[in-house]
Image (tube, helix red, strand yellow):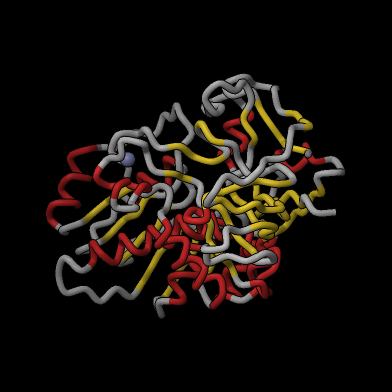
Length: 346
Ligand SMILES: [Zn+2]
C-alpha cells in the first residue's frame, strides 16, 4: 500500500513509499484511510526538527489528522464496517503515569507517551491503518470529509474545557472573547465560543482571502487592527511573539489567557516582567498553555462539529490534493490557505 513517510530528523527525506498493509491485532480496527489533514507539525517533521520512528524502524508514516472508514471491527466493539472514524493521536505512556492511567494522556507527566505520525508510532497517511478500538472516535457520516477537522477541533475542545474549569474558581460570567489568529485552530476556537453564546472577536493579519468571511458567517467579529483590552477570555492561536506580549499586557480583572500556538524560535521580542507580574497579580489573571487532547475532548469536538454543520466546516478545507497526484504540494505553505487535506481514496 502507499504511505507518505519520512526518516525522522533527516530534512528532505519525505517520500511516497510502498509498504505492507497492516493486519489488525485482537481489539484493533482495520481502517481504510479517506483523508489526512496537514498542519505545521507535519512541516516541522519534514524539516527534521523532531519526530521518532517506531522502535526498530528507520522511517515514520506521517499524518496525525485522520479520517477513515472501518473495514473490519472486533465483534465486541462499538464499531461496525462502514463507520467513519478518526484516530486519537496520543497514546498513554507504558508506565503509566497517574494521568495516563486515568485516561488523561494529554496531561502525561513523564513524556513517555507515543503519538501517531509524530513520536514512535506510525501515522495515518497510508491506504490502510490499524488502531485499537479504544483509540478510535466515531464521527457522523453526514459530516463527510469535514470530519477530518476533528483532531484540530479536539485541541480546542480541551482548551475550552480548561478555560471553564479555571473560570469556576470564583463567580464567573464571561462575555467577550478574543481569538488571535484565524487558522484552523483559531476558527475552531471561535466556533466553540459562539456555540457557548459568547461575543467572539477574531484578530488576524489577513484582510483578504477566506478567513474574514468564515469568521463573519459564524456571527463573530473579524479585525486586523491591533488588539485592545476588555476581554474576559483570550485564546491565542497565532504563536506570534509580538501578539503574545500584547495580550499578556492587558489589565482586565480575572482575565484568562489560553496559549495554543507555538512561537518560532529564536525571537527578539522581549517581555518586561515587572509590569506583567503586576497585571497578573492585581487582576487575578491566569495564563496557561494547552496541547493535545484525550478521548473526552474528541467526543466534545465531535459534538461541536455536528452542531456546526457540514457547509461551514467544508469551507475551512481550502485545498484538497489527491495522493495519486502532486501530493508533495500538500506540504507547501500557501498564502491564504486555511486547511489542506490529502485525499487517499480515488
Ligand atoms: Zn503519562
